[in-house]
Image 1 (tube, helix red, strand yellow):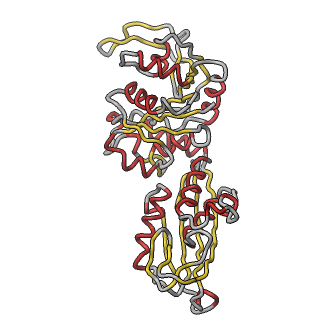
Image 2 (cartoon, one colour; image 1 turned 90 degrees about the horizontal axis):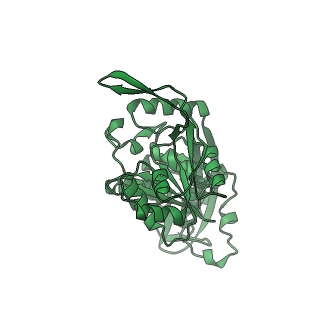
Image 3 (spheres, helix red, strand yellow; image 1 turned 90 degrees about the vertical axis):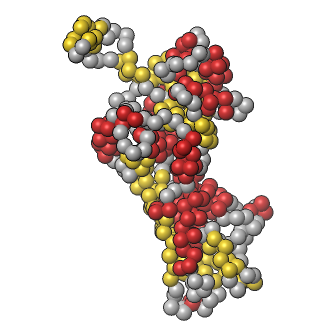
Length: 376
């Protein structure tokens, strides 16, 4: 079976306040959507992010591994747009989740997926435990029996073909996908939800979410990378994704971008997943002359598939020449773009070895890198 996650994040969320829509506001130092997306990476085969057209640039930077679909005027229209985009993809199951639910526990996702092994639909919910009143003009006008009432959550999971057909047949205006499914005659199983799987709606919800994240604690990983390449004949070198004019080139199986190689290894190291050679063996001829952004992008995608985001990284180039300073800002931007992070999280700097060793003799370039990965 092939499973996709559709993250619905096209709304404007005005009740939450703030200068940007709630899904783009910061939560524990990262956009709300960064937390939401991290919860599904590694749990599904395809990730679809439904966005407002105005948010495309920031979405591309935040989630280079996600397929972007522009949403409609309502939630159900947005979901249908995503389902239609997946219609010919071979996806067999889909999880549909609110982008403003950033704290969904892995166990909740697991329960929905498990229920889909035997049913057409499943959704998490919590039984209503409080007394319920009906109100009129600010006064209690009556009570409501809470027996059999549940508080709905997401992700709501379905067999793909059935929920696509249900959305195509629905007139619109549904509160959620369970309503769409039931209108088409689909049975939807209730699985246990979680109190921490709250939907950010009002300003005070952000404080609650921060407290939950603090209680969960933070998983921080550090990795180091080191690489060396010798000079050979040529007229330029590739360093941290930038083509730098020089009287010689760097010798290597790929494009010999020594800075990008060190950073890639730092990310693999933080994940305890080896190095470039493990993932892209030099014995494999398909990688001869390969552009190093392939390696770094793979490491960044692997990082996110494990639920981590880049806290920051630092690359130091060790050489006498070429001079790095005039190109450092471009290198910083290039690395940030490849990894899909803000440039403020990337540092590129250089030093010499005071004429000592092979770098001091101008025989090649060395690079050291450190990467900090964070999973909230």
